[in-house]
Structures are given as C-alpha cells and as structure tokens.
Image (cartoon, rainbow, N blue to C red; front, side, top):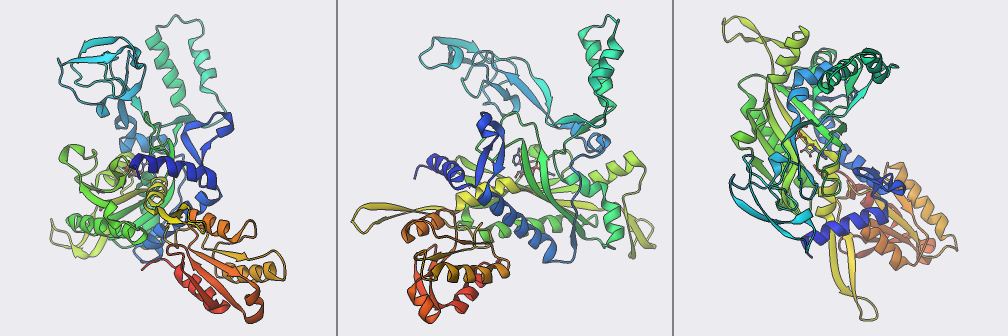
Length: 505
Ligand code: GAP
C-alpha cells in the first residue's frame, strides 16, 4: 500500500465508522480542531486510561491531578511562554501562503531560484534571488517573501465582565494617537483581564508542587501526572489530528534529587518506549531519538523524543525532557514561595550537616494523547487479500488494536433475530458488561457483514449465538486477527474475552 494512501484510508475510516469527525463539519469545518465520535472517544479514553494505569495505578511514587485550563497569566510569563513561545511568521508574496520561517526549506542567501507566478501550474516562470533570511516558500519555492513577524502560539482571551474594547475606546476618545500608541493602549486595556488557554498541561504540576507534595506526603523521587486539553495557535496544522490547535496531552513531572537526573532520564526513556511497544503491533515503528544541542528547549539540558514512523516519515509522539530545576526555581523566584524539598535523612553537600533542602530537578515525559490515537490507528490498520465464496478477490480490513485499547471489546451476534437468540445474546453481553467491558449486541445485517464491520473497527472478539447455543449453552468465539473460530461453553468464552481485554503487564 502506498504510504500516503494509508493516511487517506485512515481519515476515511475515521469518518465512516465514527472515530474522528471534522469540527463543525456542516458549517464548512474548522481545519484546526476535531471531534471524536462514538468509537474515537472510546479509543482516546482507553489510551489515556492505559497511560494513567502505568503512571499512577501501577506504582506508588506518582499521583495525579486535574488542573484548570485557565491559569494565572503570570504563570506563562514566568514559564517563558509569553516571551519565548513564538514563531517567526512569514507571508509568501507570490502564492500568499503563510508559513513558519524556521521550518521553511533552507536555500543559501544569494541563490537564484525559479518559481511559477502565483504558484499556479502552467503560470509564467519568474526568477528571484534568495534574501538574507536563507529560505524560500515551502509551497511555491518563491524567494519573494515578507519579513518575519513574531507570532505567539498561545490563545488569548479575557476573564471577567468588562470588555477590554470598552476600556480601549474610553481611553482613546478625543486623543490623536499614532497606530503604535493605540496598539499600546489596547494592550494595556487587554492586560487588565487577559488570560491564556494553556499551551501545555505541565505548568500546573510545577505551580501545585508544594500542595501535592505536602497533602500526599510524597517523598522525592516522586511524580505528578495529568492528562487533558492543551491549545496552541499553530500556524501550520497538518496530517489530520497529528498537529491541531486543540489537542490533548498526557504529561508527568518526575521530581528528583539533583545529580540523579541522568539516571532518571535513562529510566523514563526506557519506560516510555516500552509502554508504546507493549500496545503496538509494529514495535520497530517506535524509536527514541536524542535531541541535538541546538534543538533543546530553553529549560532543558537533555531530551529524547519517542518518534513514530508516520506515513510521511519519522515524527514526534512524545518528548522526554530533563528540565533541570528551571521551572520550580522560576516560579519560586516569581512568587516568593519556596518550591523546594527538605530531605532530613541526607547531609547537605555544602555544610555536611544532616538535613538537605534543595530544589528538585525534573524529568518530564510529555506525550500527545490525540497524536497517540493517530499512531495506534496507523499501527493497527491492516488489509488482508483473499478470495470470497465466488472466487472473487476481496480485501479484509482489520484494525488490529490491542484489545485493551479497542473501543468495543466484544460483539455478541445472534445468527437470527428470533428463536430466543437475541435474548441469549443480550444475557451474554450483560455478563461481559458486568465485568466492566464495553460490549455491543449487534443484530443488523448478515453475519459476514457484521464480522467485516467489527474487524474494521477493531473489535477483538465476536461471539455468535446460534440454534446450538439454545440447546447446549455453547457459542462460537471468533478472533479478529486470525478470523479463527472456536466452539466454547458460554462461561469459558466470557472468561477468554475478559482475560484477553486485560492490559499487558
Ligand atoms: N510540556 C512539554 C511539552 O508540552 P511538547 O513537545 O511541546 O512538550 C508534548 O508537547 C507532546 O504534545 C508532543 O510530543 C506531541 O505529541 C503533543 N503535541 C504538541 N503540540 C501538538 C499539536 N499542536 N497537536 C497535537 N499534538 C501536539
């Protein structure tokens, strides 16, 4: 299969079967936001639950929080997001594309380039010379570009009943101000009620460090985990849900003793790559890549990405950063609150006396939840060629999702809609639901079509109820990945499904 075709097939399957829809589709849609349908919401919740399970339930050194999306605006000044979270934005004066200068194709300044007028095929050929910025338009290759404007990636909104525009008009009424001065007045008015939608979930874990540590009596090393929505006004949204403006993250801040951070960075990189591989069919499509020095964020002294081999090439899925003591120190300095930890059993390295107060270092595995939905869908998508009963070639589409991630764990299928079969199917479904599984009782269409539908949406087990079931209490259990069928007693079948849907250890 052509690798880019795969993406088209995934997008189509997502809409057809109810995984992911374009936001506000009937109004023409928003390119930068997506809605998760009945199956997508299950897949997303299952991935988040698997992550929470491995981060919080399976260990006693990490606790969770669920913080607000809107935080005090000073948080983002202190974290560096107000000043640093900005991209150089450039307009192509030839084809009108708006793009990030730092991501544009590099071409040495002074190089002569040829491009098509307006970027339209068949148009007049033009010649240009690459300017001092050293790049060309990523779409039409033109060197005819605007200058760079800094564009902050955080969404701004206002809190409270006062509209900053009212204040603005009051302030400028009767004054003859330049455009620059008016902008200054507007920014002042806005600042009185300005808040941001968080661009990462991480900052709440730093800001609530003391509350969590003290209320839960956590001892370093310990972590705080959270997953939830984040918002970035991305200039380029791309590859379906890979990069959108509203998305979800799963982040954990692990607070460690200074000097032990390299050990914990190694530990978490190994943990995180093995977490993905446990749920994947193609472990080799997930890899770790260490950042070059020039890629490191301002707060980080080392960082690895978990990358996935998307149809367009390797790309980021999660960043695991050694954030030093940057965030706790900065928030401590900005608020005057000591965000430190006292270890009474360790000598202070400077004085040699028992008892050491220090600002913990932080290792941060920061994963994309919505991006993981895409990676696991791509990993699971399979087409198997075969022949049908009439000797015609047919393709079986199977979504080989790990059973713990699959939206529906089992479909109970009565062969016919009569003779007590639907009632029997319902009673088996009830037993599985009692065990906490999301199960579907499906009566519509032929049994073959029902199997095909459940293969395509990743249901790992189909349980077929037929006349024999009513006689001897046995059912047919069909396994999605192999299409193998087994005749089993109902109790054994239920047990097999419950066991199969468990998370891997
Ligand atoms: N607290 C650190 C942090 O936010 P990041 O690398 O900017 O680090 C972490 O984000 C993860 O969040 C990324 O690896 C990616 O999976 C996901 N992510 C970031 N921006 C995204 C976007 N615009 N759309 C979807 N996922 C995104």
